[in-house]
Amino acid sequence: MPSAANPTPLWKPDAEFIAEAQITRFQAWASEHHGAPADGGYEALHRWSVTELETFWKAVADWFDIRFTTPYTRVLGDRAMPGAAWFPGA
Image (tube, rainbow, N blue to C red; front, top):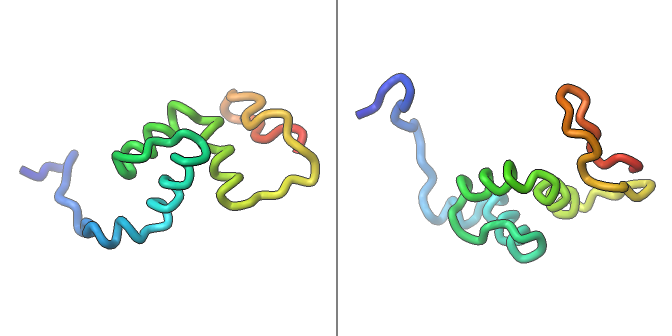
């Protein structure tokens, strides 16, 4: 039964829509190139993005072909929030 904490979704994509989504393509590519989970959909990708933070963001930078003028030394230099240092050296 829907509640304020868990309302009924207004819309849920069908299997074809999910299969053609860019995030589905990214997940398949990230699985092949960076070890993301191949199965489990958005929930598995989200879990991976949190548990493998640096690998996830490296995959995002690679997927979007972000070109740095100088190479970065690591993906996340400092996790402190606020002020996290992403791609230091770049």
